[in-house]
Length: 83
Image (cartoon, rainbow, N blue to C red):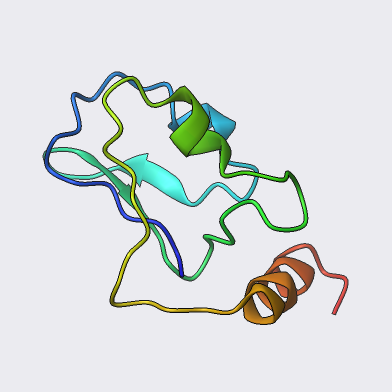
């Protein structure tokens, strides 16, 4: 699954610089995650870094975008030019 930022986001700007895939950007009202770039930090870290720094816990898994660990790794390899 990729992650999603809920409307509980307070626009504190701490998640965006933590994303190694540059999947997080400022949306119209709150920060948003590009699911085509989100690997839940697979390939980079053991845990999603945006979730670790979020002060309001508004970055859950997106239930509409289920992906296996293998799919996330393949996406990581594609994004980093290793595939």
